[in-house]
Image (tube, rainbow, N blue to C red; front, side):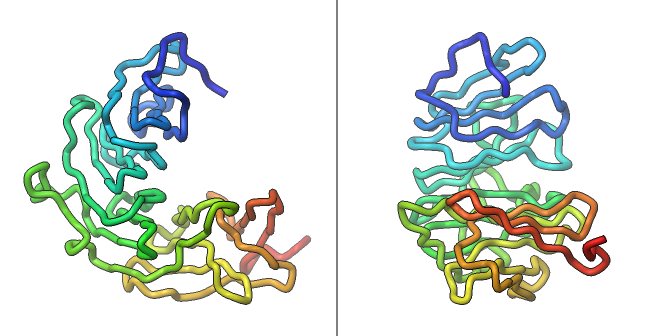
Length: 238
Protein backbone atom coordinates (compact mmCIF):
# COMPACT_ATOMS: atom_id res chain seq x y z
CA UNK A 1 0.00 0.00 0.00
CA UNK A 2 1.40 3.39 -1.01
CA UNK A 3 0.11 6.92 -0.64
CA UNK A 4 0.94 10.41 -1.80
CA UNK A 5 0.75 13.62 0.18
CA UNK A 6 -0.10 15.48 -3.01
CA UNK A 7 -3.35 15.58 -4.95
CA UNK A 8 -3.48 13.31 -7.98
CA UNK A 9 -5.46 14.98 -10.75
CA UNK A 10 -8.02 12.23 -11.06
CA UNK A 11 -10.98 10.70 -9.22
CA UNK A 12 -9.00 7.57 -8.35
CA UNK A 13 -6.25 5.15 -9.31
CA UNK A 14 -6.78 2.29 -11.75
CA UNK A 15 -3.30 0.74 -11.96
CA UNK A 16 0.39 1.24 -11.20
CA UNK A 17 3.76 -0.08 -12.39
CA UNK A 18 7.19 0.00 -10.81
CA UNK A 19 9.69 2.06 -12.81
CA UNK A 20 12.40 -0.08 -14.38
CA UNK A 21 15.22 2.36 -13.54
CA UNK A 22 14.16 2.97 -9.94
CA UNK A 23 12.26 0.57 -7.64
CA UNK A 24 11.26 3.54 -5.48
CA UNK A 25 9.20 5.10 -8.25
CA UNK A 26 5.73 4.08 -9.41
CA UNK A 27 3.93 5.05 -12.59
CA UNK A 28 0.29 5.76 -11.72
CA UNK A 29 -2.86 5.89 -13.84
CA UNK A 30 -6.39 7.08 -13.17
CA UNK A 31 -10.07 6.74 -14.01
CA UNK A 32 -10.23 9.98 -15.97
CA UNK A 33 -7.11 9.54 -18.11
CA UNK A 34 -4.34 10.89 -15.86
CA UNK A 35 -0.85 9.45 -15.43
CA UNK A 36 1.84 10.33 -12.91
CA UNK A 37 5.14 9.32 -11.33
CA UNK A 38 5.21 8.81 -7.56
CA UNK A 39 8.32 8.72 -5.36
CA UNK A 40 7.43 6.15 -2.70
CA UNK A 41 10.07 7.37 -0.24
CA UNK A 42 9.05 11.02 -0.17
CA UNK A 43 5.39 10.37 -1.08
CA UNK A 44 5.59 13.15 -3.64
CA UNK A 45 4.62 13.26 -7.30
CA UNK A 46 7.48 13.98 -9.71
CA UNK A 47 4.88 14.92 -12.33
CA UNK A 48 1.24 14.45 -13.30
CA UNK A 49 -0.20 14.47 -16.81
CA UNK A 50 -3.91 15.11 -16.40
CA UNK A 51 -4.73 14.62 -20.08
CA UNK A 52 -2.64 11.59 -21.02
CA UNK A 53 -5.82 9.86 -22.22
CA UNK A 54 -9.35 10.99 -22.89
CA UNK A 55 -10.92 8.25 -20.77
CA UNK A 56 -10.03 5.66 -18.11
CA UNK A 57 -6.50 4.26 -18.25
CA UNK A 58 -6.79 0.46 -18.13
CA UNK A 59 -3.09 -0.38 -17.92
CA UNK A 60 0.27 1.26 -17.38
CA UNK A 61 3.58 -0.61 -17.57
CA UNK A 62 7.25 0.29 -17.43
CA UNK A 63 9.50 -1.02 -20.19
CA UNK A 64 11.54 -3.87 -18.65
CA UNK A 65 14.93 -2.87 -20.07
CA UNK A 66 14.69 0.69 -21.42
CA UNK A 67 15.02 3.30 -18.71
CA UNK A 68 12.35 6.06 -18.66
CA UNK A 69 9.98 4.38 -21.16
CA UNK A 70 6.48 3.19 -20.24
CA UNK A 71 3.30 2.33 -22.09
CA UNK A 72 -0.35 3.04 -21.25
CA UNK A 73 -3.63 1.81 -22.70
CA UNK A 74 -7.10 3.22 -22.35
CA UNK A 75 -10.81 2.97 -22.91
CA UNK A 76 -10.26 5.84 -25.37
CA UNK A 77 -8.95 3.17 -27.83
CA UNK A 78 -5.32 4.30 -27.67
CA UNK A 79 -2.04 2.66 -26.69
CA UNK A 80 0.66 5.25 -26.03
CA UNK A 81 4.40 4.99 -25.44
CA UNK A 82 5.85 7.68 -23.17
CA UNK A 83 9.25 8.90 -21.96
CA UNK A 84 9.02 10.06 -18.33
CA UNK A 85 11.60 12.79 -18.97
CA UNK A 86 9.00 14.44 -21.24
CA UNK A 87 5.81 13.05 -19.68
CA UNK A 88 3.37 15.31 -21.53
CA UNK A 89 4.63 14.51 -25.04
CA UNK A 90 3.98 10.99 -26.33
CA UNK A 91 6.67 9.03 -28.19
CA UNK A 92 3.90 7.52 -30.31
CA UNK A 93 0.26 6.45 -30.12
CA UNK A 94 -1.42 3.45 -31.74
CA UNK A 95 -5.10 4.14 -32.48
CA UNK A 96 -7.57 1.25 -32.43
CA UNK A 97 -11.23 0.83 -33.30
CA UNK A 98 -12.28 -0.42 -29.85
CA UNK A 99 -11.39 -0.05 -26.20
CA UNK A 100 -8.05 -1.50 -25.07
CA UNK A 101 -7.94 -3.87 -22.12
CA UNK A 102 -4.17 -3.67 -21.65
CA UNK A 103 -0.77 -3.44 -23.28
CA UNK A 104 2.17 -5.39 -21.92
CA UNK A 105 5.84 -5.89 -22.81
CA UNK A 106 7.46 -9.32 -22.76
CA UNK A 107 10.32 -9.74 -20.23
CA UNK A 108 13.01 -8.69 -22.72
CA UNK A 109 11.02 -5.76 -24.07
CA UNK A 110 11.18 -6.75 -27.73
CA UNK A 111 7.47 -7.58 -28.00
CA UNK A 112 4.40 -5.54 -27.09
CA UNK A 113 1.11 -7.41 -26.73
CA UNK A 114 -2.16 -5.45 -26.95
CA UNK A 115 -5.56 -6.89 -25.98
CA UNK A 116 -8.41 -5.12 -27.77
CA UNK A 117 -12.18 -5.34 -27.39
CA UNK A 118 -12.52 -5.98 -31.13
CA UNK A 119 -11.62 -9.59 -30.24
CA UNK A 120 -8.02 -9.30 -31.39
CA UNK A 121 -4.57 -9.62 -29.85
CA UNK A 122 -1.99 -7.41 -31.56
CA UNK A 123 1.60 -8.54 -31.20
CA UNK A 124 4.18 -5.92 -32.15
CA UNK A 125 7.85 -6.82 -32.58
CA UNK A 126 10.51 -4.24 -31.65
CA UNK A 127 7.86 -1.58 -30.85
CA UNK A 128 10.38 1.02 -29.70
CA UNK A 129 12.43 0.95 -32.89
CA UNK A 130 13.82 4.32 -33.92
CA UNK A 131 11.71 4.33 -37.09
CA UNK A 132 8.54 4.83 -35.04
CA UNK A 133 7.81 8.42 -33.96
CA UNK A 134 4.84 10.55 -33.00
CA UNK A 135 4.39 11.51 -36.66
CA UNK A 136 5.12 7.98 -37.92
CA UNK A 137 3.72 5.65 -35.25
CA UNK A 138 3.18 1.91 -35.43
CA UNK A 139 -0.41 0.88 -36.12
CA UNK A 140 -2.53 -2.25 -36.28
CA UNK A 141 -1.16 -3.04 -39.76
CA UNK A 142 2.46 -3.00 -38.53
CA UNK A 143 1.73 -5.63 -35.88
CA UNK A 144 3.77 -8.75 -36.54
CA UNK A 145 0.76 -10.91 -35.68
CA UNK A 146 -2.96 -10.18 -35.40
CA UNK A 147 -4.51 -13.01 -33.42
CA UNK A 148 -8.27 -13.55 -33.24
CA UNK A 149 -9.37 -14.07 -29.65
CA UNK A 150 -12.79 -13.76 -28.02
CA UNK A 151 -12.33 -11.01 -25.41
CA UNK A 152 -16.02 -10.48 -24.69
CA UNK A 153 -15.88 -11.22 -20.95
CA UNK A 154 -18.92 -9.01 -20.39
CA UNK A 155 -19.89 -7.00 -17.36
CA UNK A 156 -19.46 -9.57 -14.61
CA UNK A 157 -16.09 -11.13 -15.45
CA UNK A 158 -12.67 -9.54 -15.12
CA UNK A 159 -11.18 -8.51 -18.44
CA UNK A 160 -8.55 -10.81 -19.91
CA UNK A 161 -5.02 -9.83 -18.98
CA UNK A 162 -2.32 -11.82 -20.82
CA UNK A 163 0.80 -12.72 -18.87
CA UNK A 164 4.31 -13.42 -20.15
CA UNK A 165 6.40 -16.27 -18.76
CA UNK A 166 9.50 -14.68 -17.16
CA UNK A 167 11.45 -17.90 -17.77
CA UNK A 168 10.45 -18.13 -21.45
CA UNK A 169 10.01 -14.57 -22.79
CA UNK A 170 8.62 -15.90 -26.07
CA UNK A 171 5.51 -17.41 -24.42
CA UNK A 172 2.39 -15.87 -22.92
CA UNK A 173 -0.90 -17.13 -21.52
CA UNK A 174 -4.40 -15.69 -21.59
CA UNK A 175 -7.79 -16.80 -20.32
CA UNK A 176 -10.41 -18.24 -22.64
CA UNK A 177 -14.19 -18.29 -23.02
CA UNK A 178 -14.07 -21.61 -24.87
CA UNK A 179 -15.49 -24.86 -23.50
CA UNK A 180 -14.13 -26.85 -21.80
CA UNK A 181 -12.56 -24.09 -19.72
CA UNK A 182 -8.86 -23.55 -20.28
CA UNK A 183 -5.88 -21.22 -20.17
CA UNK A 184 -4.37 -20.74 -23.62
CA UNK A 185 -0.62 -20.64 -24.28
CA UNK A 186 0.73 -18.68 -27.27
CA UNK A 187 4.12 -18.29 -28.92
CA UNK A 188 5.32 -14.79 -29.81
CA UNK A 189 7.59 -16.27 -32.47
CA UNK A 190 4.78 -17.83 -34.47
CA UNK A 191 1.66 -16.06 -33.22
CA UNK A 192 -0.01 -19.46 -32.80
CA UNK A 193 -1.58 -21.11 -29.80
CA UNK A 194 0.87 -23.86 -28.84
CA UNK A 195 -0.85 -25.43 -25.83
CA UNK A 196 -3.72 -25.13 -23.39
CA UNK A 197 -3.92 -25.79 -19.66
CA UNK A 198 -7.01 -27.71 -18.57
CA UNK A 199 -8.28 -29.51 -15.51
CA UNK A 200 -11.40 -31.34 -14.40
CA UNK A 201 -11.49 -28.82 -11.54
CA UNK A 202 -11.53 -25.81 -13.86
CA UNK A 203 -15.18 -24.94 -14.40
CA UNK A 204 -14.89 -21.17 -14.75
CA UNK A 205 -13.14 -18.55 -16.88
CA UNK A 206 -9.59 -17.82 -15.72
CA UNK A 207 -9.37 -14.09 -16.41
CA UNK A 208 -6.15 -13.46 -14.47
CA UNK A 209 -3.09 -15.74 -14.61
CA UNK A 210 0.41 -15.50 -13.21
CA UNK A 211 3.65 -17.48 -13.57
CA UNK A 212 6.06 -18.22 -10.74
CA UNK A 213 9.23 -16.18 -11.47
CA UNK A 214 11.62 -19.16 -11.30
CA UNK A 215 9.62 -22.39 -10.97
CA UNK A 216 7.46 -24.21 -13.52
CA UNK A 217 4.21 -23.16 -11.87
CA UNK A 218 1.16 -21.30 -13.19
CA UNK A 219 -1.69 -19.88 -11.10
CA UNK A 220 -5.05 -18.94 -12.61
CA UNK A 221 -7.89 -17.04 -10.94
CA UNK A 222 -11.53 -16.42 -11.76
CA UNK A 223 -13.72 -13.42 -10.99
CA UNK A 224 -15.20 -15.10 -7.90
CA UNK A 225 -11.86 -15.39 -6.14
CA UNK A 226 -11.17 -19.06 -6.80
CA UNK A 227 -7.53 -19.89 -7.61
CA UNK A 228 -6.22 -22.85 -9.61
CA UNK A 229 -2.62 -23.97 -9.10
CA UNK A 230 -0.83 -25.87 -11.87
CA UNK A 231 2.50 -27.65 -11.58
CA UNK A 232 4.57 -28.34 -14.68
CA UNK A 233 7.21 -31.04 -15.23
CA UNK A 234 9.61 -31.26 -12.31
CA UNK A 235 7.15 -29.63 -9.94
CA UNK A 236 5.33 -32.75 -8.74
CA UNK A 237 3.81 -32.70 -5.28
CA UNK A 238 6.40 -33.73 -2.67
